[in-house]
Amino acid sequence: MLASELLGSKWLDEHEDIDITGIAYDSRNVLPGNIFVCIKGFETDGHKYAEMAVKNGASLIVAEDKIDVDVPVWYVENSRVEIAEMACKYYGNPSSKFKLIGITGTNGKTTITYLIKSIIETAGMRIGVIGTNQNIIGDKVLVTQSTTPTTPNALELQQLFAEMVDSDAECVVMEVSSHALELERVHGCHFDVGVFTNLTRDHLDFHKTMENYLNAKAKLFKISDKGVVNFDDDGGKKIVANNDCDILKVGLSDGCDLKAKNIEISSSGADFDVEYDGKTYRVHIVIPGKFSVYNAICAMGAALQMGIDMDTIIKGLENATGVVGRVEVVPTNTDYTVIIDYAHTPDGLENIIKTVKDFAKGEVITLFGCGGDRDNTKRPIMGEIAGKLSDYSIITSDNPRTEDPVSIIEQIEVGMKRTDGKYKVIVDRREAIAYALDHAKKDDVIILAGKGQETYQIIGKEKHDFDERVVVYKHLNK
Image (cartoon, rainbow, N blue to C red; front, top):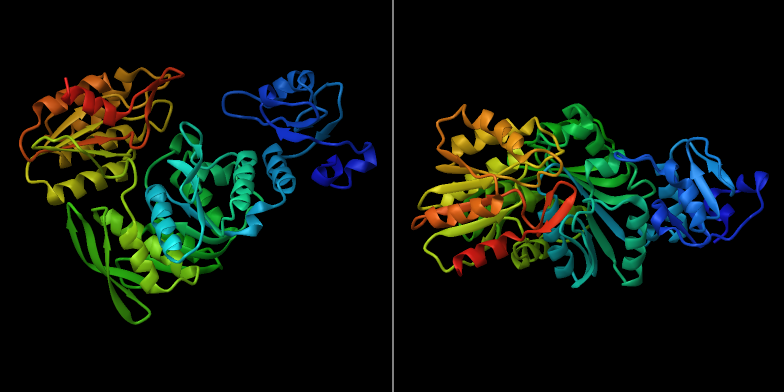
C-alpha cells in the first residue's frame, strides 16, 4: 500500500510516494518498509525508539513531537487517532463488512458477549467474539488474551477484524473498555449496537473521577446506531438523557422497555419473567445471581435491536453454557463447594457473595485480594463488603505487580476492621487457597475471587503460572 493511501493526498505535497509494507508501534516489531508510529504510553514514549525503528527498517515515522531521523517524518496531533485510521485503511475497513456489537460497563461485559454469541448462533449466524477471555470465531480461538488489554490496541483490533472477515463472520460482539474509548482504540469503528451494563467504582487510577469514567463509557453511544442501557443504573440514566441514538432501556424497574420480574435464584441458575412489547416470557439461564439476570436482559436487548425474534433469543439463552471464571464451580469431589469468580471490584465482590449466600447451605468463605498498580481507593471498600457479607474471609494477594503485597492487604484490612467479620491474612495466594480447602466444612462454599479466567499471577513485572483450578486439584490430590 502507498503512503498517500494511508496518510492522505497531503503526503504528496511534501514527499514522494513510497510503498508501505506494514504498520508498527513497537520498534522491536518493525520490518523493512514499515511505518513506525510513535505513541506516548504510560510507562514509556515511542518517540524514544524512532531511531531504533529506522535501524530495523522503518521507511517512514509518524510522530507528535519533533524527532531527528534519516527517513521522512509525518507529524500529527494525535498518534493514537492516526494509527487507528491507518489500520482501518490498511486492512480495508473490515468492521464495515459485518454487524458490530460493543459492550461497555464495569461488570458483566464478558458474560454478555457469550450470551449474545449463543443467541446469534441459535439464529443461524456466524459470530466472532473479542474480549477478556479470548478472541474467537465460531469454535476457533484466534488469540488468547492472557495479559493483553480487554479491548486490543487499534492496530491489533483491525487485524482481528480482518481475520474475522476472512473467516466469514456475519457479526462480531466485543468488550469495549473505558480505556479503549478514551485511548482511541476503537476510533474508526461504527457499532450497530452499543450496550451499557453498569458503572461501579473501578479504574480511578486512570480516570481520576467517576464522572470521567462515565463520560468515557458514554462515548460508545456516539458511535453506535442503536443502544441498550441498564436503566436501573444511575450512569445508564445519564447516558439515555444525553444521547440521541435509538436506545432500548432494560432493567427490573418501571420505565424500562424490557423488564425482568419474578426472579428465582438457585444453584442451577436463574429463572425470571420478561415483559416486552405487551407480552410476558419466561426465561432460564444457567448462571445464578441477580446480576446474571441483568446480564441476560442486556444480551436480550442487543439481540432485539439486531432484529432477532424473542423465541430465538430465549432459546439462545437456554443454550448458553457458563463462562470460564464467572461463577465457575470447580469439580472437587468434596462435601463443600469451590467457586472461581473474576470479581475484582466492590460491586463484583458484593454480587458474587450475595449470589452464593442465596443458595449456600453452609458458611460462605471468601478468599480475595486487590491488584497492585491499580485503583487503591477500592481496597478498603472491598474489605468492608467481604467483612459484612461473608461468614469468613481470607485476605491474600491478587496480582501485586510492583507493589508490596503486604501494603495492599493492610489497605484492605482498613475496611475489614470496620465490620465484625472474621478473617485471616495469608499473603501467599497458594497457601491461602490450601488453608481454605483444609478448613472448609460440609456444605460450605469457598469463593476464590479476583482472578477468574487468569492462569497466571503477576509479581513484580514477571508473570508466573498460577491457575487456581490446578492449585485446587494439586492440593486435594496430595
